[in-house]
Length: 303
Image 1: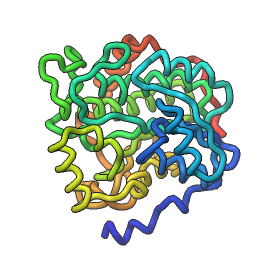
Image 2: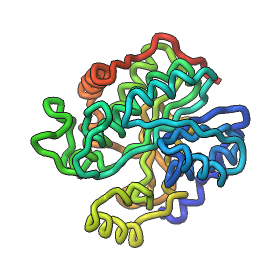
Image 3: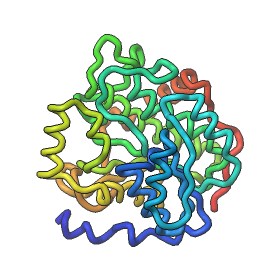
């Protein structure tokens, strides 16, 4: 069933995006590059927001259409602020794609646990700083890792100093992505903004994130990709679907196949922990304090 439905929605169904600007974080490789490529082929001007400018320019050179490369290090809030401060034009869609996965214990430039700091706090700050320019959507790439081990947000120990494992930290960061989307949609609606906040996950897709994992974990995940996974072009479809289809704010898009590992993009569910509005609001308030970035008063107009 999933294989048959795979042909019901693909990148060829993207609308004409001529005249629209889209920022894709982490666009130099993996799902980000595939996403950027599809959007550029649909006519969008795609900004590659990347940490390594040399790699970003090399990746952009492989993409037809209108592209641009700007430096952004989500693990450094000064870099996030610099990127946002340089932005002055309308931004149709922001795609929060970049991320790190199951790293040994590390910290960001600002001292946060690296997975939470990069995957959530960096994108939280970037989104709010760019919101005055955004006219259409914010799409944040999460993962069904948000369900791992009954993941929760450890407000008393966000760095997991007393219980760190790469898996637990990654799950917390992906749960944070979904809670961020939930609360972002609420505050956008409350502000009367037409901008929608959506989330997506790629299923079990072959991505460059695996390269950061430890040897044994990388071996297991690589085997899983070969047996039940899908390639990065299929893995990018939920993000593209969330970016253009007429779906409700705060929706979560993933593959329609068994256990959401592969298949065509569709609306999917999330864990109870990722659906709690009170936790989402508390995480938002904590994130404001940690990043010193708050929801802007001036909003974009729909286009």
